[in-house]
Length: 159
Figure 1 (cartoon, rainbow, N blue to C red):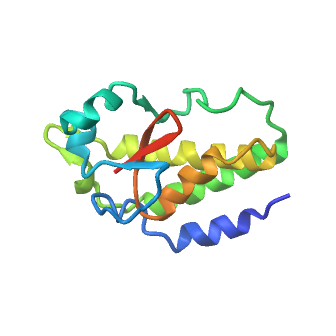
Figure 2: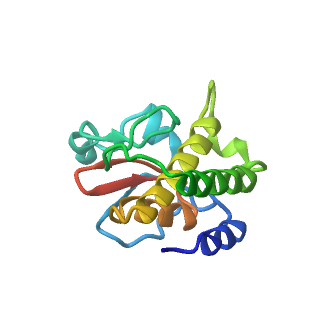
Figure 3: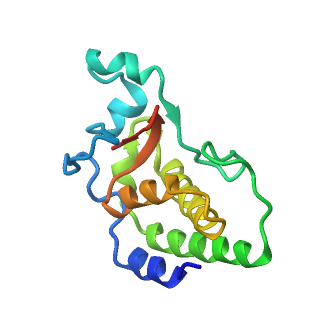
């Protein structure tokens, strides 16, 4: 069993989304895009265009399904873990700089908050049921200050 308190402490000490646009990850499992505009509104450079067409977006709504694992039955203990982590993430991102997510006339701040909440809820499920480490890796990108938005094959696309 894992200790959620480690994550709760880590969340308190993380400045989420603070490294968007900074190329500070040297990991071949990650494709970094330099900004929101290139990710959501315009196409990245021509070399990336073919891969970009294969992009699968990470969920940003509670109603979306987990793209990595089949739906699992949640125990009351797991539901409590998911609620606890969700509340902590909401508190940690409540005062985030929404200007980072605005590209007129679009505001992606709600999608960003919903995405990070989805990730950490699924992280609790993944750990509790010992499913793997897909969400673990994505959560680490959030902890590093980036915004994971999707995946192509076995690579995570992040800003």
